[in-house]
Length: 227
Ligand SMILES: N[C@@H](CCC(=O)N[C@@H](CS)C(=O)NCC(=O)O)C(=O)O
Image 1 (cartoon, protein in one colour):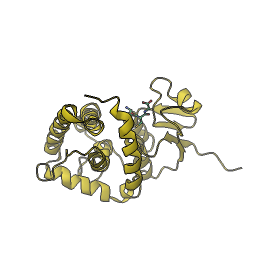
Image 2 (cartoon, protein in one colour):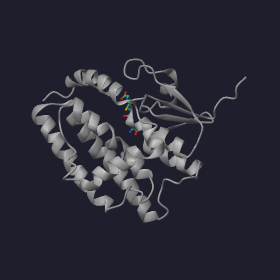
Image 3 (cartoon, helix red, strand yellow):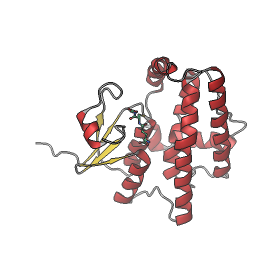
Image 4 (tube, protein in one colour):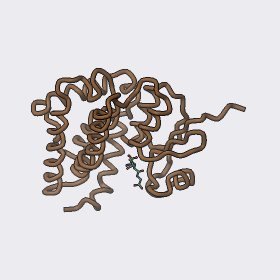
């Protein structure tokens, strides 16, 4: 009988939070089994409910049968468990800052961007304004570096990776514009550097399929995000 893999990732192909984990497992060359959650919104699997009973969200990393949840937390767990190609900066201050900006991105930037994608009219304009403001703060952080992590991809690059790929698709499907390459030249370069880097470019969801699924998803979301 084939040996069961000790690392499993429970997720959904479209989720930027799940892709974070895939990228890092690939970067660190950790072999894992991918388990796709079939019906995340209407019929959560027993595995999901038992391994993440508090939030009931993907991604969940299962390592030797133990569950680790919340993607940023999972990234740190992976970085400590498999130290090759380190993600976290060595310096404690730089680590604190990387965590601060990753939290900022999850609490403010992704929420505003997603709300802009899902809404219309006044509500959408307000969300666009907030997302653009977030981009302004992040532009300042790059200071001419190819990656937030410096010369190579680090923790914050992975945490922000969705902005290099999902953002454009959300803009297209949501008929709106957040990212202006003239206004945010460093972010623009970073986006290209990120999606063109070897491990990332081979592990992005297919754009056409994303557009199709997100177009349908936006119709469902419209009810929740009404002005
Ligand atoms: N803070 C969580 C967010 C994860 C998340 O929002 N996952 C979504 C899919 S992209 C989910 O599982 N949603 C299911 C639900 O809300 O019931 C993380 O970083 O892991």
